[in-house]
Length: 164
Image 1 (cartoon, rainbow, N blue to C red):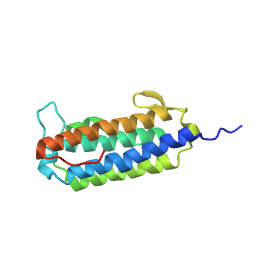
Image 2: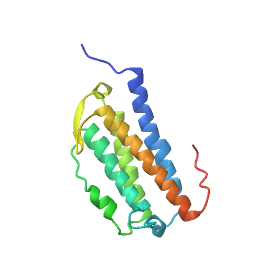
Image 3: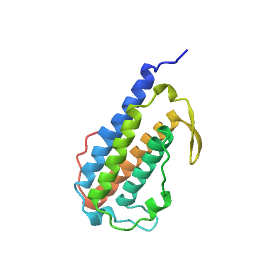
Image 4: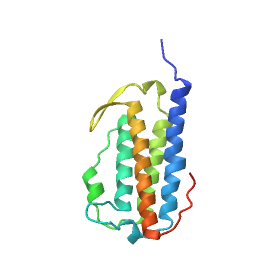
C-alpha cells in the first residue's frame, strides 16, 4: 500500500517554501538595499560576523540542508570559510548567490515526495529525518535573517519598515 501525503505534510512544505522565498529573502533584500558594500563587511568585533559572512553562511547552510540532505544531491561546502571570509564580495554577488540557493531549494521542496518526510538521511551532523532537515533549514534562515535586520539597523540607524 502506498502512503499518500496528508494535508498537514502539504501545508508544512508550502509554508517552508513561502517563508524562505516570500518572507525571509525579501527582508534580506530590503536590508541590502539600504547598505553599501562596506556596510555588509563591517563587524562589531572579532567575535562577530558581518552581514557578508551571514549571507555566505545562509547560502552554504541552506544548500547543504535542503539541496544536499533533503534533495539527496551531493554538494561540497566549506563552512569555516563562510565565517572566515573578509574579501569584500559585492552585495550584488552575495544576493545573487543567496537567491540562486533559495530558488534551487524551492525546486527541491516543490518536487519532494512528501511521503519521504519521515525518512532518515545522513547530514554532516548525523542522521536526521527529511522533516527535521527542512525544519532546521527554515528555522536557521529565520535566525540569521533577524541578525541581518539587526545589523542593518545598527549600521543605518533607520526603521527598515519591513513587513511582518
